[in-house]
Amino acid sequence: MASPERFRAFRLHQDAPGAPVAGRFVTQAHDELPPGELLVRVAYTSINYKDALAAAGLNQIVRQYPRTGGIDFSGRVEHSSDPRFAPGDAVVVHGFGVGVDHDGGHAEFARVRADWALALPEGLTLLEAATLGAAGYTAALCVHWMEHNGLAPGGLPVVVTGATGGVASVAIDILAGRGHEVVAVSGKGDADGYLRALGAATVLDTSVAVPSGRPLDKGQWAGAVDSVGGEMLAWLLRSAAPDAVLTSLGNAGGAELHTTVLPLILRGVRLIGINANSPMALRRTVWARLAGDLRPRHLARIARMTAFDQLPEAMARMRERATRGRLVVAMA
Ligand SMILES: NC(=O)c1ccc[n+]([C@@H]2O[C@H](COP(=O)([O-])OP(=O)(O)OC[C@H]3O[C@@H](n4cnc5c(N)ncnc54)[C@H](OP(=O)(O)O)[C@@H]3O)[C@@H](O)[C@H]2O)c1
Image 1 (cartoon, rainbow, N blue to C red):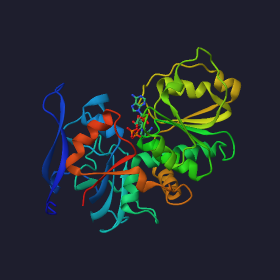
Image 2: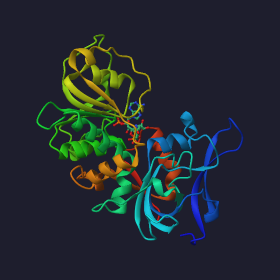
Image 3: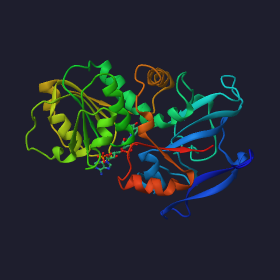
Image 4: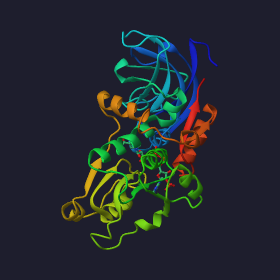
């Protein structure tokens, strides 16, 4: 491991405007980190879809280079100039532009604003917090808002799309643990065993989401967690049961949405947009639930431990849709 003064980071570079973005491992000094009240020794970070896209310069996620990616991490405070935190405190950090506009967790140390750090909720380890990360928080936020809008176990199934992905894997685990019947939709032909082990009752292939030519299909779902968007979300809207609550959180399959208002006005379907970059008060509530009543039961199965040195290859595999679960990187 690097000395406390110098540490390893995976930095994204773009040598000229419009040139390809390339990542490389570098050694940095603490005084090269951006400003912030907390210096954190990163224990675990992860790879989210957004990290994988950013590392390839896609979707204009990062606009200023060089940049250390990694939109989430857990670790211990090494130094604090804010009275709310002391050295040794365990924290989890995601959002607020970390890993995008501000250097993130793909490094042995990170410096962040104290306002962005959440004290690790009691009952979660640093590894569990990073396995959850931004993805687990997003999954829990979907369940939180669906239940707030009336979703209750015992009714029609809840459908989870992009099912082997990080957000979706955690969502399946949480929903099944709450007693919901979960239908998983995946494009991976060999994912049945993994998805059933997380609690999915049924696994469907993504070919279910082809356009039907009708504004409404048979209403089948009480809720949905959609990572995919595009045709998938249009299908979810058409096939949602009366008063269903759908959450839209991702666009892995496309950002466009071609649909009609009929599911909304004839069936009272509620479509809720999810943005995980929530205010801190909501984060505290939802993270406390992740450590409590929404705690996933299969985090160890969802975590795929990935060596820091393998970061570029793992991000490439994620862009090729060849990963499943949460890719967790141990830094210590
Ligand atoms: N709104 C927010 O605040 C928020 C927070 C976190 C993530 N997100 C977004 O949510 C999505 C999922 O994130 P993640 O970190 O869970 O990603 P991930 O681990 O890569 O999972 C995405 C899953 O979507 C499916 N997929 C991938 N490419 C696809 C394609 N071209 N067409 C259809 N399905 C495809 C795959 O599942 P199968 O192979 O099983 O079908 C894949 O495992 C991303 O779009 C991400 O940017 C948004």
